[in-house]
Length: 133
Image (cartoon, rainbow, N blue to C red; front, side):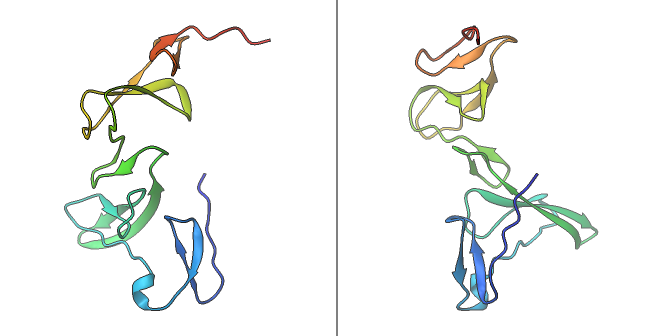
């Protein structure tokens, strides 16, 4: 389920700050430009938000907004984890998955732990989680 952002009259939503700002000109209102060759379209200069364009011919019939998960950025084709170091890095929203980075500045590979295991960030490996009380 998505959050709906509502701003007072005369204000526009800034997705990077998650706050409303005063609309000073029409340029403050970000619009999605759908391209017949691309299903995903950037939302202004945002690295987190993008639109999914459903087209009929050359006309947009539906645009849905999406937000990349934390620690990922929209690269024009999807959400990617950008490697700032070599190694394995856990995903806060799902303890059963992790990113593997082979080079700094490269794109990470998303991997999943075997069934019944979770990623231990301190060890950098999948382990059997301790029993819960």
